[in-house]
Image 1 (cartoon, protein in one colour):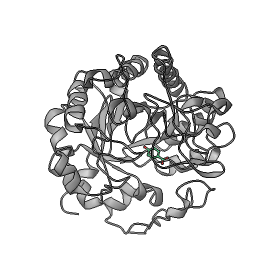
Image 2 (image 1 turned 45 degrees about the vertical axis):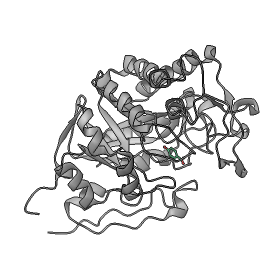
Image 3 (image 1 turned 60 degrees about the vertical axis):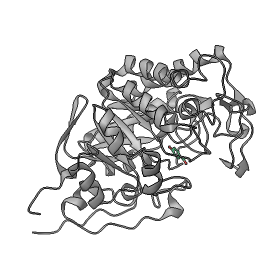
Image 4 (image 1 turned 180 degrees about the vertical axis):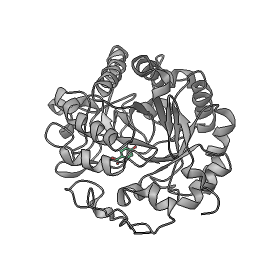
Length: 370
Ligand code: PHB
């Protein structure tokens, strides 16, 4: 290389200085053990990817009610905290940094995954189209139960407790998952939030829970070790808002009041608008737009390549770029970018569930004698 690739330059993120601008995206891999506890292979998997500037863990439940898929990890039980410790230690031993992603799926669940077979909860009793992934295969989503106003402080408390547990488990920070049609996103968007109390109706009311959760988590970690993930143009998990530009402009402008480690924006990838830049453009929901209203660090995600990632940073649209599928199959992705080396193809059939195959067995580049 004659000129350095923007992705491979250092960047400050909250209180950290990262050696490069590659983020390993949060990726559901469904390999947690009994009790939704991370296993020894999780430590191997994440440590293999410690060359990323930052790792964001797979989405991790803040409470038993927050579960929506088989074999996804949690951060609410003591066994889970103990299960995560070897993961953070292994990443740190390799010189990496890892944030935990805090997750409550809301209505994207099924009674068979819920404590006592209860109904999943949501802002409103609106059944998502589609099917839940359960231990016995796909089953139609049910109509969730609308959370009582009196239950909302308990939801905020579960995020606070999970944030404390993440600190105890040795993470470097946390990311609040407010994207992709899960609980916080369900509150934000008016397709899923029909409430008539102070958590519904106006944009300010719909955003109330997100900011209450953010305040609780920031209280535990300090704002400079907290990120938040949003998907302003996403339709995954049957999401809809009547005016997403007004909604997400409000939320993101208000995030300027925090000194967050970063804002993580997903451009369409999952769902029917997958990878369609025209759709984002039409809605005016591009990262380039949000850049004009957000003062802090932006991580962009959505099927970026080495080339388009470098370009996004060079153009100033994003400060860092998250890679998902490429990190699944290329544990040494930053090194491969540095060398402009070929990438391993990924095997989609081993993304969700299974064992070390397709998880910890993707090869790193052979060390070449110079
Ligand atoms: C998934 O498990 O399919 C999943 C989890 C978290 C996301 C998106 C998809 O943000």
